Length: 393
Image 1 (cartoon, rainbow, N blue to C red):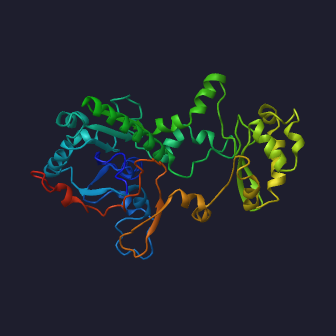
Image 2: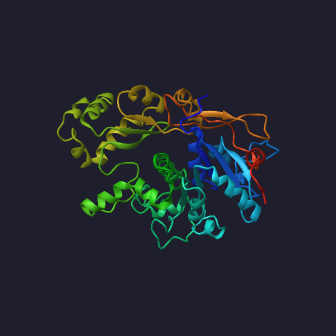
């Protein structure tokens, strides 16, 4: 196994639940040594379902396993002097620190960025919070708690997602956490690059709600350019046609053919080749004006065929994909070929479990799932041995 592009990078991870751990999981996948510093009771996500039926240990469930694989766990009680002292000694040798507490928590512990930077000027201190940190912009919501659903709502994502204009919809996965986490990982690597060149670390933060707004960039430029307020538009697209979901005989499929070339291919595939050149249908602008007719035309064909039949007909010819559930994803050869379904050990169970793999593929220094998530405090002795006056509180 490759040591990874980030081998040699030491990350102290104080974060809990999803946003911060998802960010540091990305770093661990690519070789960073991520030391997960947990309070004596552990990250609350350890107690989140699902659990394997035969798991008598219950060190953690699938939620924790998925986003903490390949990390090391150290227990430190930062509310005690011994715990804080051990933590400070870890900071001395760290490259990066990640935390997702509410603003002011680390300062009240005497462990704020300015304090840590004096000890380790190269330290990159990365924070992810609902509404950001006052150091980079003092939001009126700074002290508000936030979760994924709040970020999706305030950042505009729900306001442009849903079956109809007056029915906003929450996105299924926790993108209010994971998308800002992706941005935080990018910010960390940018700051690490600067520290390597100059010896100077820095503070950086991501507000979850800012990350969601950046994801929804179209609603910003659409309003600025036209004054139009984007609303939920179901399974279509306000600017492209056809582009969305269409009913099949046994479910739904996605088709995106807004360009002239793909529209010609699609019309030929559904047995209506004359519409490929008809001026009333041949351009994206023309089709936008008759979106209802375009949808009816396509569904008159797709509704008579199964997803498998449509895949055989459209696959490789036009932009197409069936809407898949977990059973279909586990059976799809693409995900096996790309290493996106990875088995790892589950403490307390005799059967391996499967988690999502590493989507970033580097040719010279490939990333990898480097092992299961850690038991609480599993690496405390390994990491703390040799630190003067180290303690777990």
